[in-house]
Amino acid sequence: MLHRDLLKPPVRAEAAAVATPDWPQRFQALAATARDGRLQAYYAAGVPSADAPLSTVPMAALDIETTGLDPSRHEIVSIALVPMNLAQIQSSGTRHWIVKPQGDLTAESVTFHGITHSQVAQAPDLDTVLQSLLTAMAGRVLVVHCREIERGFLDAALRARLGEGLQFPVIDTMELEARLHRRPTGFWARWRQAPPPSIRLADSRRRYGLPGYRPHHAPTDALASAELLLAQVADRFSPQTPLSKLWW
Image (tube, rainbow, N blue to C red; front, side, top):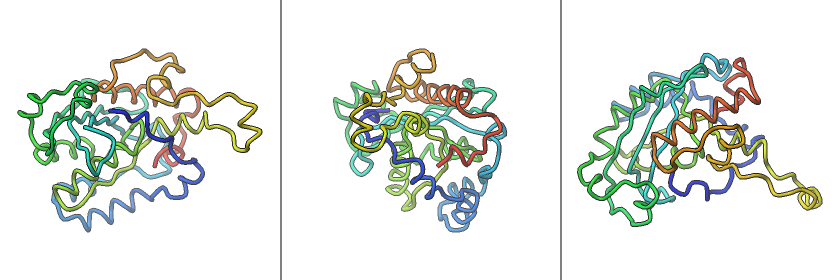
């Protein structure tokens, strides 16, 4: 997850919650209007309802590695999905794709994610693996750490290739941490209190006693996000919490 920790924290939960789509209805509409057959099938698979208890929700942790932070200028080089639910993380079902960007890798991005020029030179374009990716995502709520990255880059990549983007619901573990640790409002409240703790993936995991992992490796970061969500739910929610309390 190249540099995503440098992004600003998500917006306030109460403001963002108003804008959360009715995802089942949105998918029905998208299935009827999507032009690409792969997208039609993805949307037709639907998603759980907002009132579904977390214990019944099929999920997949998603992480992508990119050449930078700006979806309008940078590109995806690696995607990983780890299927999961509240009872277990199905690490044996992990899918990982290295894909060829249409532009050149930068030395900085190679330093972070470790994917080399020779690896991407032999890798397929995202369009080639899109069917497999969407099949693995279908019917699941995606678990991410910083939704702006996964949503923004996948949407931009599909628009560049298909002329239409990609929409999907997420549970954002960074946002769940931000809700808990946001700086209080008002000058005096902020002045009296120490700065809020970091909501970076590694720092968030450390607060729940989770082990440290190698960063900037898509399968490992996806697994790390999956484990973080299970810890967050165990600490602050319950298996009966409705999906609407967590998804975006």
